[in-house]
Image 1 (cartoon, helix red, strand yellow):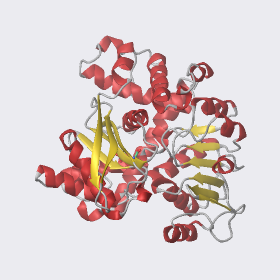
Image 2: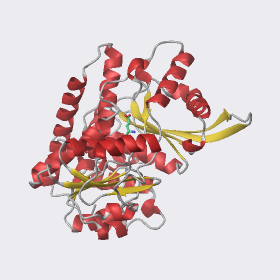
Image 3: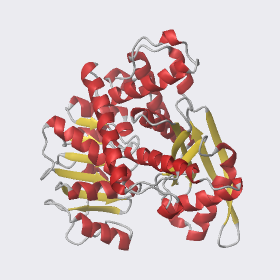
Length: 436
Ligand code: GLU
């Protein structure tokens, strides 16, 4: 992002994901020479639902949780995106996350618009029964605005295939028909796709490979640090390790694990599964999130939450590639500093798009009833990530913009093309050929 753009955000908007994504959207609209109507249509979600979701707790009392679903656009198809369970969820965050989904599905050429959901809850404080009732109640409150051709939820932070199984069952119970395509990231037995669980991490690693190729970095023997060891960070660390990358540090909400000559990731995965954290892994030292993100290594992968790479972290950053596995991990100020230091950023809307890509494959399999092998899924994912990376990289070179700006330009161009084709913006406002 250009310095001017970053500075145009005033405190406290500098870490408000909605303000940040609106700024990036506006910048892309301007650089592409599109009509301001494109910004007007896309700057807010077309539909935003806030619900109070009552759940009977194990002690017999009812607790009402605040829940959201943001449906950004349906210009390219039904809206698509995960549901996160986190105590820090806010309305603006969910809106921004839904916009990022629009842009990542557009970059990958998927027939979707973006959506996102969230519940303000710390799921670690719920029993399994309470969690199930919350998942079901969420679907119950939103069923009118969901469906395979309307809006398709999936896992996100702190939600997984077990929760998708409950939600899918609840959806089918309410609509009284089999509808596996209403949600993705389901257990295999309910129509989940092979390869979905690791898909986001696999996509991150595919994007890192593409970047490394272009930078002349050999991955075997390269070094990496991964922030977050959940759905995404865990798979990314495992797949990097399998490629011969030395993963020096990982962390989670409880703490970190650092070993200067590389962690034994398969053993760490077992350890984390048994203990619920990577902290205390034998032979490793603890490491803070800030130390991890500023570690001297080839690749840093923020795979946790928004705004982790701020100005201070960016000043200290010593990596060659920042692979944004999380959504919105870098603040505009952090972005500008990394850019000035020549650190190659693989922007979130490209880097972490592997998850929704395999969600799309899952939905296609559900619609057709024909199920693919894991090799087939992974091959198709590789091809999609390779093409998407190439499209963004070409825009980066041709228009001499940073990778993030290039990613937004590719994405916004495609959404605008659909808006024009639908007659929502005048076709003469499309002065360029968006499909690079
Ligand atoms: N929550 C994931 C994301 O942020 C996946 C969404 C999906 O599969 O629909 O991209």
